[in-house]
Amino acid sequence: MKLLYFLTFIFFFSCSETAEDRCFAGLKDKLTYYQEKKPFTVDQIRENKPDYLEIINRKKYRSFKQDSIESIHRYDSDEAQEARWKTHQEEYKMFEEKFSDQFSCSNKQLVGNIAYAIGRNALGFWLLKIENDKSLAYFLGLSFSHYYLNDIQQKPIINGGFLELEGSLVKIVKVPGLPGYDDYSAISDGKLFRLNLKDITKDSDHDGYNDIFEKSFGLNAESNDTDGDGISDFDDLNPMFRSSKNKFTKLYELLMPQYGDTEGNLKKMHYTFTVFENDCDYFHQVSTDYRVLFIPENNNKKTYYVKMTDVTRENISKIKKDKENPDNFFISTSGSSYVSDYSAEYKNGKWELEIIGGIVI
Image (tube, rainbow, N blue to C red; front, side):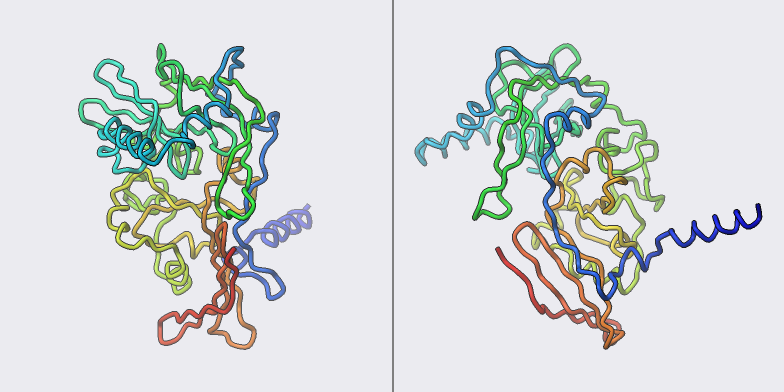
């Protein structure tokens, strides 16, 4: 029996990953790059749909093709498109001001003294709400990779305590010659997506993010401070992990996307995040000027939402050691249309980066 316990002990620790395993690639390993997700089938979408969502088949409906063609007005003149844009800007001015242009907005509805609209950003779909001059955004957890919400809703979106949205189940189609550009193709038309407002607005820890958002991206819905650093998730630029100072953390900070003059404003944008798929502890500990989230590399450890939704636009690889020089390392950044390979040397307490290769599509 003692031998069995000993072997179990050895097996456990031999299988446990260390920071070295999570952050450094072996000499023979290839550095990993940004990879696009494969589309789900209709059955897979239904199997992975959240419990709070009801999908109803409609006999009469506005098709994906009709909505997508009419909503973009592709045959309008430049003057007509500009006039339409100005009208939209005026109609949604209140939402754009309250939410600092963090969302593209549609389907505004006034219910008593509450103004609602559907918002979309790089993370997905949101229900926007303005009441008594107070603005709140509730994440819906409906993957834009598989759920298409009609831009033109034929009925009010708020109905008897429910959010009801007409749309289709779709898959993303990559357009040849246009890297990073996504188009859609309907795989099942004529759906009504129905969600209870109580489910949408539930915020168990009262931190400003609804439970659906926190569960979708791996935050703790029962604690308003997921990483325990004393900063609430809503105000924390890196809410998942405590920031730390380390030379490899600094390397990742140098390679993170730079947003120029907008970075100061991004600190105030509570619903705008850059998402990375990476397990490296050093990367997790970065200090940033904008909000970041991390999702696991292992598909089995991902939440249902990030498993089926392509929310990453950029990636930074593991670090590869230089067997000839212990102070020199190799690392890559990548996106949907590029790969940049770097040599990074740590000299006199600072990193010196040199681009040694890459691809631009």
